[in-house]
Length: 105
Image (tube, rainbow, N blue to C red; front, side, top):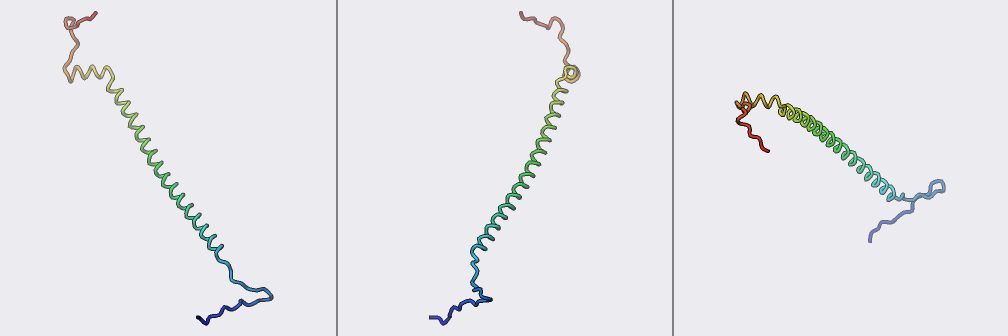
């Protein structure tokens, strides 16, 4: 066996000293560390989601502008005067003469 002996802690001014119980302190530190890490993780997630929302809002804005531009282009292309001008100049079409018109009853 070993020759180590456990000595009693000394008394100071009538108070007996004893070894502190460190388990509650370590548990408190572990709890605070866990809560702090969760807080940091959640803030990182929120920041990432804010960047994602900003990117998606930009895409939505660009898509709305593209939709407006395409609607304007469609309205311009479907203008009857433009269609008649293209038919006459580019396709060499002309209005039908009376003998070419067939009336269906």
